[in-house]
Image 1 (cartoon, rainbow, N blue to C red):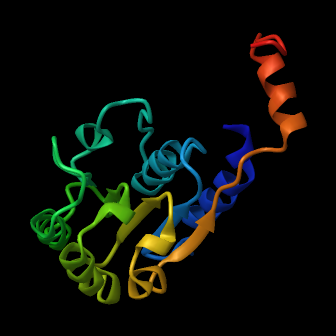
Image 2: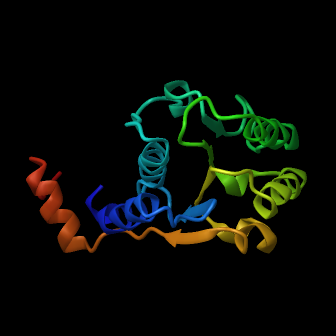
Amino acid sequence: MFWNEELRRHLFQRVDDGALTHAVMLAGPPGMGKRALATQLLGRFLGVSLDASAESPAHQHPDLHVVRPEEDKRQIAVDQIRGLTAALALSAHGNQGKAALIEPADSMTTAAANSLLKTLEEPTADSLLVLVVDSRGRLPATIVSRTTRYQTHPPARSAAVAWLAEQGLSEED
């Protein structure tokens, strides 16, 4: 999505320079392309191209772990975060490290957030955690403070209309 392009370039440069922190939070309103951006970032970190439109990018790489609310649930449970922590403690299959996507991270239970805190405070070597959130205000301040936060914003109306026209849509559409 064109409105995330500058942020994408910045994050990719941080990966390429080896300067990306171990935990990144992508925050912003729903529909801003945070999940696609997170998938691209994780792919860059792992040295592969991941399909952001796939149901679960975790099926695309053995060192990528995805944590989402389980089917028919609305929250991420503590056992899911414990499982992620255990998976990150194992050796990587490849040479790039291990990566995790937590989305929506603002749906973690309090116990799950507390469990994640230890991983954020004492990250495993060569790991990257990407937390995708719609509202970082729903996360404990301790989680927010231990991530590098990036905010996504909707494009200006004129830029969005121009982009949609380039995609073949009329102004009525």
